[in-house]
Amino acid sequence: MAFNFIKSTEFYSPPPAPSSPASTSRPTGEANVPSSSFSSAVAASASVSASPAAASAPSSSNSAQSRNAILVSHRQKGNPLLKHIRNVRWAFAGIVCDYLLSQSSCALYLSLRYHLLHPDYLYYRIRELQKNFKLRVVLCHVDVEDVVKPLLEVTKTALLHDCTLLCGWSLEECGRYLETIKVYENKPADLIQGQMDTDYLSRLNHALTTVRHVNKTDVVTLGSTFGSLSSIMDASMEDLARCPGIGERKVKRLYDTFHEPFKRVVSSIPTMPETPVSKDTEPGSATEVTEAEKDTEDTSKRRNKEPETNVKSALTAAFAKYASKINTKKDNKSEGKEGEGTNAAS
Image 1 (cartoon, rainbow, N blue to C red):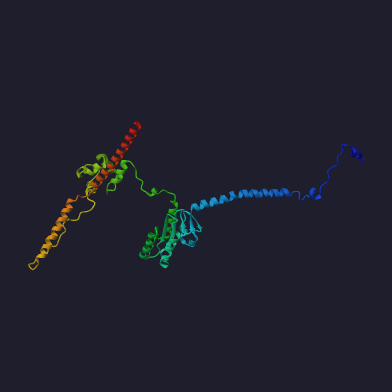
Image 2 (image 1 turned 180 degrees about the vertical axis):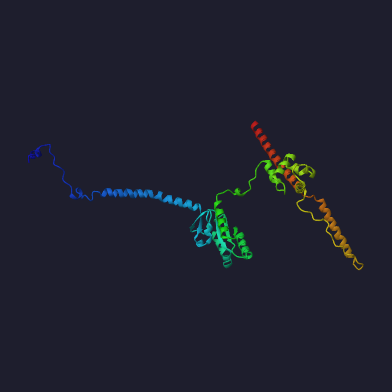
């Protein structure tokens, strides 16, 4: 009441009209609703944004595990072979083949006992694979005593359909085959090739130790004495016998290896039984005997004229061909360089 006169002055402006009580006044319980809904939305958005990463992580881990594991068809449930796959992971999957070993290789399991009961099973299983795999293995478990006929049928079916047949006489062996193919999935093909050194002494060692009773020490002695393989091949038995540590037996082995023919020549003139010529024989039979003798003589002469192919002659011919190839390559390179020089000069 004491300040009513202020309303009549120019400095007073009335307050704004009050809004509805529903919009202005809210219960204390509803005051936290927007914040809670916002937090839930944020949590939902965070979960949504995090869900692809969380989903991709298990999927990537699952794909990595499936890549490093043998995928087994559900048809193989209860197969005792699975107990013997211990060194490689395996997991069940909905696949056409029995065992998926890689993207381009698979395996079908077949028991010969089952093949005798269902002879057409293998054919229909191979037909289901179509041409989706480069390597198709038929893993055959030999579990019967009479294996000749069923194994022949399985071999024919595998060959006609471009499949590789692997036979195992136990479940442990079959499991080992699957583990080995999976382990060597990404290995190069030349890993199973024999590694040979490139130096001359190692090659000479590899060549001469194939002769029986010749060891590495003998190779060093022969190499230091004669200098090369061709000199060793041309050496006589007396020259070989002068080498220390090489006895009579080794000398004979070496000499025979380089000078014996590849094919053992059978006696050129076959022994014919002597048939006594009786007085009652016709003259035509005597002429037939003389013609047969002439034929045998002709064949023996032809065999004598033909040169005997032995190790020495074969190796010399191979060396000559190799040297001619190298010379032709060198000539071609020199001609190419000369042509380039003339073109540059012009």
